[in-house]
Image 1: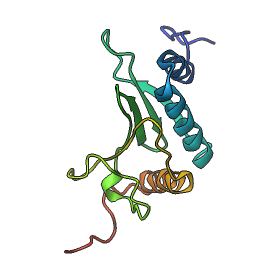
Image 2: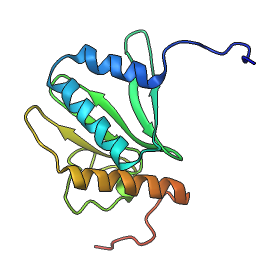
Image 3: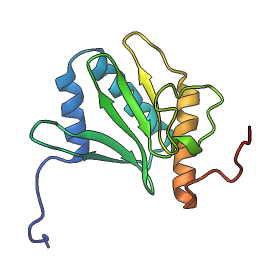
Length: 144
């Protein structure tokens, strides 16, 4: 039985694939690669497209018990923003943007840059574990 008002449009995954194809340059390839790594790190990840406006095609969002990260593409950077990045350990120092905030952290990837794939997957797995635990802050804070 169909639910009344249910939309039969393309899925979020299909819309994200379309967005990646439309980029048509290094940004699309980079976003596609990061998407693959996210799915490898968490096969149960949910893809969503949020914040769609007439002036914006929307932002890809990967979630599991809450937002893991978003994937935005700008003229000179692909930005992956981790919703609770400030609570994640980042020994490989992948986070290189939004470092002053209390909650989010981001990874800016410029054309030609490589990323430590195993360290990235570890961040994704940590984000999933944090979301699944229901905690929003690390259990121990580093005091300086």
